Image: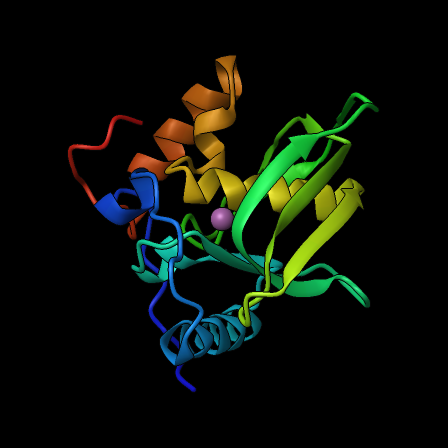
Length: 171
Ligand code: NI
């Protein structure tokens, strides 16, 4: 297995919608194994495939005991329960973090790396992680979810960071 390079904000693959996985083959399982290793090494609570430059709808997560896994072709549903407050950060925007409102409860349906269907109902931190990762797969980085002053501050911070990849991406 290999630790893959995590691409920073501004890299085009992070800012485009990813493609559904069509084949549950060894190549996919190798990608998932590498993504676990890359996430654990970082370390991080989640990692989307486009963060390692792969244009596919896959993410892995590790939000504590019994909350580690992989979801392929995930579909996210926000459930009743309103919003949660809390901070968020991202391996593609290292060193930064901002309060980011998210739904408290979600359900995420998809498949594991072998093509077996999975449905995970999540609350709190895990629900936040799922929303963050599915946003990645839709080409959205969490700082782009912020509003008002926080958004302006985040934009200044991102553009001023050494890792920022200047590109045609609209913040
Ligand atoms: Ni992220």
